[in-house]
Image (cartoon, rainbow, N blue to C red; front, side, top):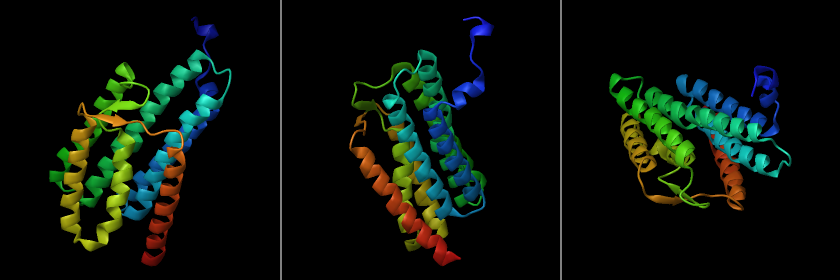
Length: 212
């Protein structure tokens, strides 16, 4: 394709599924901000909505008729880039911040980000095992589990929970890179995800309200 025939970069950004992806990126950036500032309930809310928008960009893309091949390819790459931030960088910063940016938490943060980069690159080459099965645990499951784990934060001291968080993320990273077949949730599962996000957003919002 010659340079004159190439679309502008911003023309892809106006594509509705990519707008949804950008909303997910915005949620991740908000989550990163609150993770850095130590507002962990708000950070968890951010990552939950990042997952929700990540699910819906694909749903919207499949429902839109007449999308070009270029739009599809760009959307897949765009989604992958955002996933590294939402499900790699954000959890890594959350771990670092919860560990008070102690130097011993740097290896864990590196593993989380490296795992996301390796897994997403592998997926971009090989895709699914079949239409309903991933190889290894999908990255979005990490933060959904992480959000659930944070519901029990108040039962532990800060130092104990930071170690627990470290162990959980390293374990999830191992599952991300494993060859264990895991189901690809879709279809009616999206309604379960919506309910999960809304319920946990309400709980963490209530926690924030009571902290203030």
